[in-house]
Length: 307
Ligand code: PSU
Ligand code: MN
Image (cartoon, rainbow, N blue to C red; front, side, top):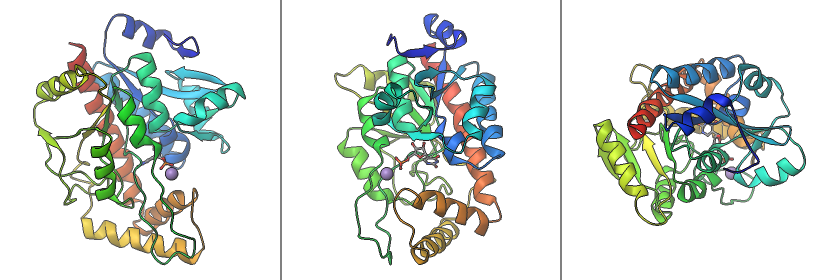
């Protein structure tokens, strides 16, 4: 085990006894959701993992130390501090050396999960290839989330509701194909687009049986140089939105961002907050509910893999 990784006793014991553990990212708490929903959802994700008989392991960088498993107070600290960094995988080494505190995105979390030999990770949605903003005064540039390459390198199954349709989803899926990351639908043929289950894009394979999904992962990992896999769980049907409704929200938010001259890193937070307001918090309720549902499925999958 990497000597720089600090595991809680609960997580270390579970791993030593080959019991089920589920990694959780902390960026969803620090940057992904507004207070007070961030702490409520982060706690509910951990509870959902436990209800399935698995141990939750939220990852973060606290005062320069890589942490696997956080106390409620530590998670609250990440949720409350506005200056907590958003750390991708590439940030970890330098941020450790500088003694910084940061929340981990999908790319950092899969790297830490792999280092601790945690095979399953549950989150809301992954980052992907951004759309080139139409009508934006800023020059068009490619923005590809580090999540995609990180998933190709770490043998970790990421359970999510796909990726947000504010991204370029066809190009995101092409990139996952190029990187050798299988996209596995659990009970779905279509790639879920986070807010909506109705994308017209296909997953690589569909599984309806958890046992068979676990078998597919075991066999994927039995091959040389196999990296991760993306497991897709459609958003809860009672809160999921219609595709055209989401597209209207995305376009309204993008137009507002262009008008305000916003691009680069602040773009996604701006777009999400605009969509939240325009939907009277429906996107926020959905985001929380799908993240909790994905944590539960990740718990079930981890239990199945540990059996
Ligand atoms: N997608 C979501 N919610 C999130 C994120 C993605 O629906 O909170 C976060 C995750 O931590 C993800 C990160 O890893 O954003 C991707 O950021 P970037 O596009 O800068 O790589
Ligand atoms: Mn980016």
